[in-house]
Length: 160
Image (tube, rainbow, N blue to C red; front, side, top):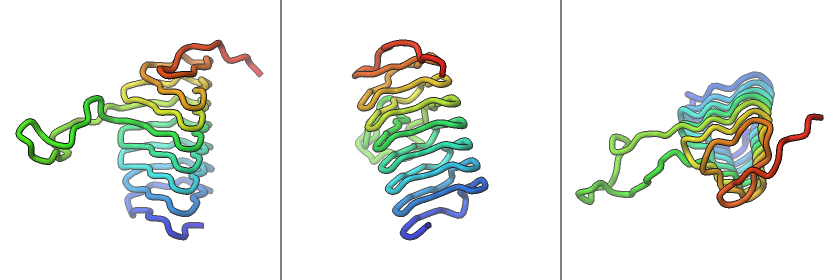
């Protein structure tokens, strides 16, 4: 189950969490019954709820909170810096002291399609659906479907 995984000792895992090969986890928490696919990285101070599926090749950075019952498709990328730079104004390599994390929240029951990019500082509402390949640049209302670059409202989610 955890062959070729790097799971740091500070990771908090709930009950019945499934983790596949080639995963890098450090300083994060993952709730009960969640599944993490192959080639996923989840960084420190990221929080994954219960019953979440994180598909392969996904990157969840520091400052991301994913609530319960969320689906994250393959190759989804989260961003936590609005103005990323490699160096400071004087040309020295940046350190953690030179920037601050901009948080992102994915609310309960949302679904994020394959290869979506989620910029920092947004909230994805409950039961919202993000279309494959979308770039989310602003908040997504609950019970809506958005798609495109930038992601735009397509329609409301039809209750099942």
